[in-house]
Amino acid sequence: MRYKIAPLFCRPWTLNGISPRLIESHYENDYGNALSSLNAITAELEALDPATTPAAVIHRLKRDEAALLNSTLLHELYFASLGGDGRTLPEPMAQAITRDFGSVKRWRDEFIALAYGLAGISGWVLLTYVPRDARLINHTTAGHEQSLAGGIPILALDMYEHAYHLEFGANAAGYVAAFMRNIEWDIALQRYQNAAKVEAPPRLIQKQFADLPSITVEEVKGMIDSGNPVQIIDTRPRHYTTRTHEIAQGAVWRDPERVDEWIGELSKAEPVVTFCVYGFHIGCETAVTLRKAGFDARYMVGGHYAWKAIKGPLTLLEDTSSSGPGPIMERIQQEEPSADPPLE
Ligand SMILES: [Fe+2]
Image (spheres, rainbow, N blue to C red):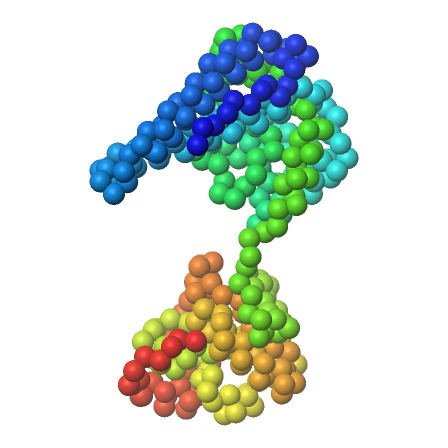
């Protein structure tokens, strides 16, 4: 693999307050050097035998390769970010920015603040589209190798001193203002529209429960925090609960194999949320059973561990005895599992 130099995307003589001399030096020395170093390292990596080369050597080369590859990608984006008048955002671009930042002004203020934060430090300020979240975000990098995983940068401001010292000296603010005056929004919009076509990475789909209503842990926590009535049933398998001492606060544990014994405790006037260890089968199957019996039941996506992952409050499992597990729980806690069947 040999990386090829990309021609300058912007027309340096058209820029307002950023001279051709500055762009030429930047393009030739910094972008050019990054590209030639990247090709040298790529050749070095191709020539070595990974089976016999010390791991530390491969690690160092791959780390440098990633930094240099990102440097070339970001420099190409930087040069392509320039050439417009900075002010005129095409309507779809303004709408996308307003959707994700509240207003164009707010986006602009944040972007500039991030640039000021890098004055004298070096790094990149990037406007990036994240397909997973279908949204734009501003962020910085402290080096060349910190782009958001899966993100697609659509606007780049180079805050390395080589990008402005030649003409602006230490006046980073003057350089940032000049950059903002020269943003080429029409091309940024094309990049955004291309990025927005990238679909989010596939999420877990349980085909057998595709039609079953679910609820997120954040929504459940919100219901509890706001005092909305909800019946939360922890249906982790019996063998699992015998070796754990924690339960989501606000939930009661019920044996998923004995639904018939406790279904009568539930009220049809309030929604029911069921969950198991990871949110796969058991919480779903319990929700199916309850819905067939006429309850407004949903399963909690991600189960007990998703609750823990959002730092949802926990309480001792034994504490739930006072809130109604009754004889079912007492009987279960006396039993020891003979083996560990699958959790779900
Ligand atoms: Fe640069």
